Length: 152
Ligand SMILES: Cc1cc2nc3c(=O)[nH]c(=O)nc-3n(C[C@H](O)[C@H](O)[C@H](O)COP(=O)(O)O)c2cc1C
Image (cartoon, rainbow, N blue to C red; front, side, top):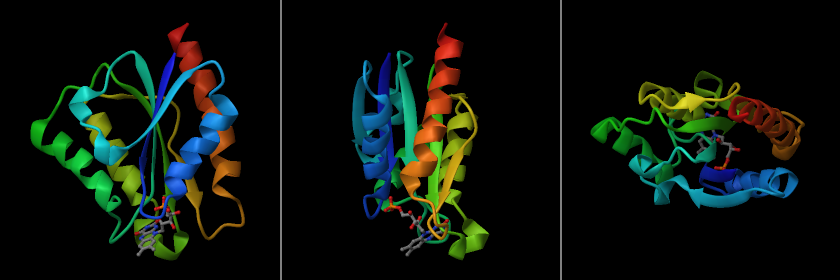
């Protein structure tokens, strides 16, 4: 099984989190980690499982480098019905009105384009005492169980 981690970040938390998840769960899988800014949604394939991890900036927006990925889905309306993904959002409840909206809007756009979401959106609150990896790794373990069950 191929796993492709796609991150959207401003200050690297999401990227490091992808590395943490890969270190914990990646053994035996063919793993890649890429910025959302370097991926065209039309190139997502049906042989790969995508873990999307993104933070939120501005007024509930995606990190700047991730915005073109969203914009391409909006403009080109690709059929992503072959794509399987799970999504994890980083946010901060200090911004309660737009908490983790980056991952929310990206999830909604992927679903609108027909992509199949596995499990529920994971979320980390930077105002909580928990470390992102202590939330994301158990979440990813659960997702992998679901993805494997679906593939079997
Ligand atoms: C200028 C600024 C704006 C932010 N806006 C939001 C927001 O609207 N909603 C939210 O949930 N978090 C917001 N955050 C919090 C970040 O999403 C959070 O700190 C995240 O862990 C950063 O991850 P990153 O290092 O991968 O970018 C904001 C942070 C900064 C510095």
